[in-house]
Image (cartoon, rainbow, N blue to C red):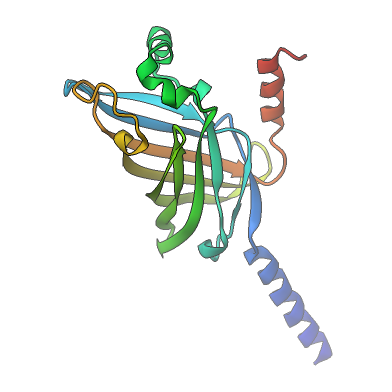
Length: 206
């Protein structure tokens, strides 16, 4: 009887440990934010922002115990064309965006709807202006990464925001106000050694 009780205690302890919130490190070389908006109604133009190194807490069993905070360096904004990148950085109309070192998102709560889908609520700060946003969120997979041999999680989230809500109202007759945003976030347990290497490369260190 005592052996049975001990086995039961060990089982429940292991289950509780598995269900506890886990801290994941963002795999910055894979994680990014993509966005698109209308260009005079002709075509949607797109760009990307890289997610800076960081970490977040995710509880696979109880999403309400999870929290996410990410930053996106504005210097890493890429419209897919070098000349266009230079033009928008040199345009005073976009100065409010680029004078801030980063765009930030901080979750306020995560609501699980069904299966692996839910809503990620939080505060988005762009050009120094903070507004509440809600993103449709899907947990793609939680499990072992066969390349890194690390416990990993992959998350996709999307939303529609208006740039004018953040004071970015330049060229409203030429560029759409609504921006479709999609976040691709992969993270793993343990340090992101590639992020350290990239920081050294960008700083000129060897």
